[in-house]
Image (cartoon, rainbow, N blue to C red; front, side, top):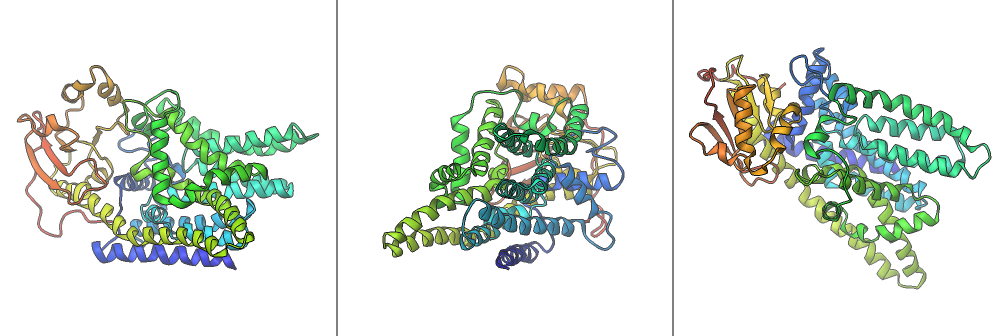
Length: 512
């Protein structure tokens, strides 16, 4: 009954955010261009085009194939806007995350009151609410990974084979929402394998979980390998580069900053909380919290931006674990203070957590609406402007592929390499400072796009070149989301697809 309160809080908080979005923009909208990538892939899947971004080329461009499949249902349901369906999926995932947080908190040994507090914190955490409204897979991965951890600890406590299979099933499904879920699944199976060595016949109990893990996850990674010549989605090659390197302390500091912005007080108690969990033989959540940034830091490429995602979103799914591990440390301090007769000091420590969280909750909706406005003012606005004017055979080379592909439905050359991976060697060749000239030569010799849609700050040589005249500019007010403050549409020297006159009002593309 108590955790229903957390679910209700999650529903109310997300509902308020969605209501504010409708009030400001008049329709559903999203805070990332990546949201439109998911929706574009989902629409093509619903139309029978498979996991292809365009044409007949199948690419592992989606890091969340199961999420893409769920989103595609919205394009098949009569009378329901696909964008509304995406919001409903995000809302369901957010409620699931809050409930799973409470269950994991109980599993690590927190009292029911503290567990409810953790669940309520996650129900009202701004970055998780941001994720719920983004049409991204973040919430689904958070819910499944958190529930899988809870089931794993419960299975060990009760020596339950059924819960072991349940934990593996949750984490295997989580891999279909984010590939880094494979790391958590591997950590779990490794921990169980080590424990089974000390138990007579323990290894036999792992056969079914290992078989289930393999059956559930191997097809996805085989698809990545066969379709993209890598065991990971094409986004990994575009955003992180290739190969392993030594762990980067600079990257780990960036991750700490992400955690600090979400749960600053509980982060201070996370180290002691992890130590306590290790003493209780329930260290798996703390190990996951450490392993994910460590492995990501080894995958980070010196020539590419650090793999954090917008605002650190790759780490939002572990915020429930951070909160719980920190709460374990804080709960020990509060109990010690209370036992020493310093109950006011103990209450003050909890009050600081709630006050800091409340301040973030007040600021959250405004920050969310600002990120949505940034996407609307740039990628969505440019996409709608072009969709009214582009000839059917026009080809676009773009920096952000989501909204432009979704609304224009024209062939896309992806300048970031997510769905045009063959461009990456051109961008990364030596000398590094000459990449814009190499890019122009490659475009001229190969795809010969008719128009470029880029942020002026990212492509200064092109944006200020007389060979690429500016057709239209879109200023982005108070930008906190996009790669620059101005998005420009440039004509190419070889274009043979002149823009059409503007169609009459009401005859252009509309939101689905």
